[in-house]
Amino acid sequence: MSGAPESYVRQVLVLANETVAGRSLLDAVRARAAEGPIRVTVLAPQNAPRGGLVVYQDERRSVAERRLHKTLDLLHEAGIAARGAVVDPDPLQALRDGIREFEPDEIIVSTHPEQRSGWLRGNLIDRARKAAGDLPLEHVVVDLEEPRERAHVLVLGSQTVVGEPVLEEVRKRAAASPAEFTVVVPADPPGAEERVRRTLARLKAAGIEATGHVGDPDPVAAAMNAVHEERVDEIIVSTFPQETSGWLRRDVVGRIRKGTKLPVYHIEVPESEAAEVPS
Image 1: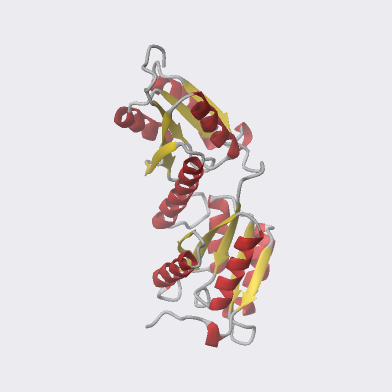
Image 2: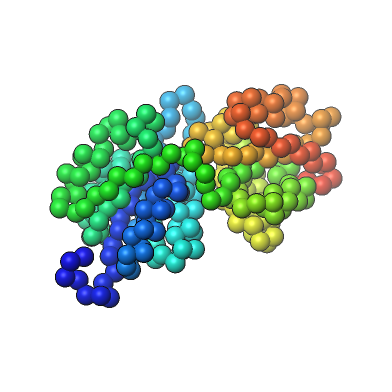
């Protein structure tokens, strides 16, 4: 900032949802940090429900929080002071609120490329510049197909997800190359929230950071919702063996593989090795 003392910390406000952990956005923030001290505030609006998809409010918030935490972790690893919040689904309202609350020196708005961006179809950038007034505003385009710093692995299971075979498979994947993990447990049968909690606790105890939430009762819908809400690179699906698995009788693994067109790794967990949630 012109005329500011050398010790001045420039305040940068970032607005992004699905693109929040994109490399182009992170590079833009790192470039500013190379010019002098900055503090970044990241606003991550929740996605509005997509037509044809049943997505629970808690699931949408969980996805937005997960994107936000990824970005903050990467910025902190780069030595950049950063904070953030999950905010109003309306990006323009979220931006106005952020300007009023955080009083930034400049703004970065991140979107998908034009052919994929609902924000750009809604003319967000011009409207954001008007809301920003005299504040500098940069528009960063993030193509989520570009290489990322970590693969995103979805771990899907119900009664088997807390079992030792799942933990071992995640350990192996974490050791193979940088990855982050999201655990999704379908809402049916009862006990899904406890299974998510216990699985995340076991992963954390093993030194593996992961996030998770309860998904649609239908495991195929739960997987498809997760893939639609954020980029997923690989999927691990755990089931009981063929003779006792309702998921396998319904070809859940095959339908997820066909529907997502992603690598899907199937683990069978014997009932004796499934750490079931007490009733």
